[in-house]
Every structure is written in structure tokens, then in C-alpha cells.
Image (cartoon, rainbow over all chains, first blue to last red; front, side, top):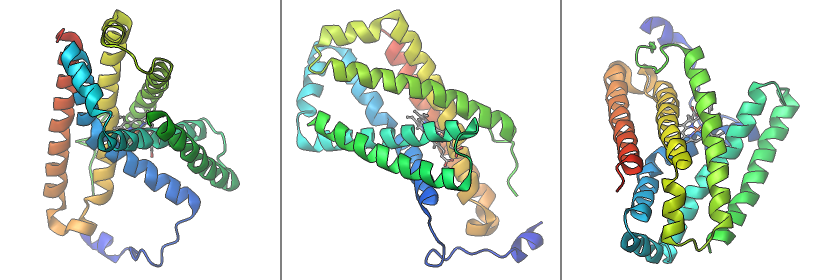
Length: 127
Length: 123
Ligand code: HEM
């Protein structure tokens, strides 16, 4: 097995690999998926503080009024929005919508554009 | 060669389905809760607590915690089997991948228990 694997031609030279729009849309979906997993404790902690008591709720509210905390929340919401929009496109393609080469390109472009708009809107809402 | 002994559904078809079903649940949940938060900005403690403490939301949150756990496990299993292979890690690949998967599994379990205790513990 190892011998067969060793002889397979593999190109991992990032400078010669092309990254068309669908590839970029796909890798961001993966990065945001991993990022969300890492960010989950922050979300759980905020949920915990918001429910524990009126005092912890007020403390959390004060914390979320600081620029740094808002930026972090915005970052997490941005990852969620992108992963969600790209995930919905994934599910649509799974049921056969936009499965052509051209459809794939358009879908990926649409995901990037729609998420960018939603992320900006979310930023405006958080501030 | 990566075998499927560590995958959640034991084969790709089940894993694929688990990830779609949980994605659907998570998608509906996040659109709904973000919508609720947007229409209730400046919400006070009692309203928030009553919302999250309602039986509906307790059940939804429970469902979502289980869904996130399964979804993340299947997703991160795919990522670890893609990147932690003999190609990058040589003969240590299996050991490195299983170690990474063990850490991910423990984290997922901690998240899940934390979430469930928070929702049902009345704290
Ligand atoms: C906090 C919640 C979430 C976490 C931690 C998470 C994490 C992940 C991870 C790590 C992957 C694997 C990425 C890959 O293999 O490239 C993934 C895939 C996926 N996620 Fe999520 N996700 C979350 C929420 C969502 C939501 C809300 C949707 C809604 C539609 C969604 C839809 C998908 C889909 C369809 C895939 C499969 C992609 C594929 O097969 O390549 N996820 N997710």
C-alpha cells in the first residue's frame, strides 16, 4: 500500500496550484467550520453568563459594550454567516441545483457576495 | 490508508446523511435565534430567561447541542483524515491522527455536557 502511495504523483506546490472561485469558497467553508468549533466555548460561556443570574447578565452586557468584545462577537457571527450561507448552497447542490460547472462558479460567487453583504450588515447591527 | 473505524456512522454514506440532517437543524435554529435577537435588541434579563427557559427552547437547545456535536465530529473527522495522513506525517500519521481525534472527541463531549447541564440544570 505504502509503495503504491509513494509513486502517486502529488503536487502540493501552492504557487502552481490554481484556486478558482469555487475552491476559495470551499476552503473558507472548511476554515469557518473549524473556527466555529474553536469558538464554541465562547458562545457557551456567553449563554451561561446570560442565564445564570441578573448580575452575570448585566456583567456580560457591560463586557459586550467594549470594542474588543464586539469585535470578537462580530468575528464569530461572520464565521457563522459564511458557514451557514455556504452550507445552504451545499444542501441545494446536494438536491441537484446548480450542479453544472457554470452553476458551481456562479453559486460560489453568490455565496461570497451574499455572505459579504450579510457580514457587513451584522457588523452594523452589533455596533 | 485511512479506515472508517473512527467515523461516527462507520461509513461515508451515514456520515454524509448525519452531516446534512444536523446542518438542516442548525441552519433553522441559527436563523430563528438570530432573528429573535434582532427583533429583541436591548432585551432584559427576565424576558431572555423566560425565552430560553421555555420548554420549546429547552428542547430546541438540547437538539442543537446534540446536532452540533455530531456535525462537528463528522466534519472534523473529515478534516483530520484529509490532512493528517502518511503524506504529511509519514509513519507517525496514524498516531498523530488518532491523537488529534481523541482531543476533538473529548472537547466535543465537554461542550455537549456543559450545554446540557446549562439548559437543564436550572442554573
Ligand atoms: C456551530 C456550528 C457549526 C460547526 C462547529 C460546524 C463545523 C463544520 C465542520 C468542521 C465541517 C467540515 C468542513 C469540511 O469538511 O470541509 C462542516 C461541514 C458542513 N457544514 Fe457545518 N458547522 C456548524 C454549523 C453549520 C450550519 C448552521 C450549517 C447550515 C447549513 C452547516 C452546514 C454544513 C455542511 C452542509 C457541511 C458539509 C460540507 C461538505 O460536505 O464538504 N454547518 N461544518
